Amino acid sequence: MWICMRYNETDTVVDFQLCHDLGLILSVLSLIYLLVCFPLGVCYNVLLVVVNLSNKVSMTMPDVYFVNMAIAGLVLNLVAPVELLGSTFTRWHAWEYNDEVHITLLILFNVSSLVIMYSTTLLSLDYYIERALPRTYMSSVYNTKHVCGFIWGGAVLTSFSSLLFYVCNHISTKMVECSKMQNKEAADAIMMFIGYAVPAVAVLYAFVLILRIRKESTPLDQDSARLDPSIHQLLLASVCVQFVLWTPYYMTLLVHTIAGAPGYINNGHYLPTYNFVRCVSKLLAFSSSFAMPLMYRQMNKNFSGKLQRLLRRLHCRDRSCPHERSAVQQVVT
Image (cartoon, rainbow, N blue to C red; front, side):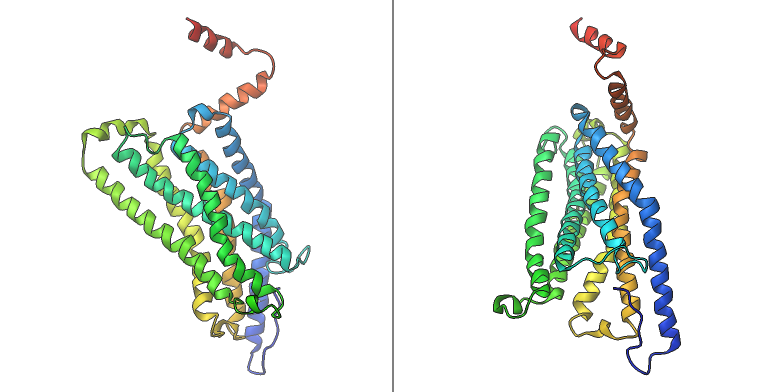
């Protein structure tokens, strides 16, 4: 809860006013997100999923990963209004939720973040495989769909270890087993390492390999034209945007892991600023749920054609359309 108060006699009026100003800024940012970014995120994520799933035959390996990220973005869209309308983010909060709701929101947020980061990471690695070994079909759509299933399963299992620390941090200390695990810093350290450090190293490694492939001309490189040339720009943009939006959130986890245990950030002078930075970083993380599908819509050249085919099918409904009849005639002849 965003509360401004005097912690001791040394707190000045300036510190008290700063806390109020930060709370007001955070409330305005939260409302702007809910009014602008939230509806855009829902619409574009649903559009990305529906358009691609309705054109499964023409889906490519990158499309599968972006659909996976769009589904994770929809989960973030479910979490965002519940959190942003709570007392933590806005003064004009609509409700207060208990520890059980807090844990549920935390699970959904962590799973979505892991799915987004690892989908981005594996997209980079599979793009390198597609460029280096285009004839092996190791990064085929069929394989990618199974990989995305493993990503969700792995995200749930990975979140379970940190979940134990969060749950035990909110229940009674009478349980001996949990009283030894009441360490939120350990949970943040797990998420920081698995959710950010590992994907960051893997993406850096993939980019080094991709740059090496682009510099070295090989006979197999001629077959890489099977991939849409715009995919390279989309890959670079998606990786940069994801890490720009998620890095502040994971940095706050790192700060809490290092400084939270000794209690430095609980100092009255630093706590309002820390809470403000932490909330703004989470707002940036929520923003990835609309930035990614919007960027995919603008940079993927095939998306417009898929959307037009879907709209034509919806317009025709049950009656046979002329373009469908001509297509059938071409197949028969």
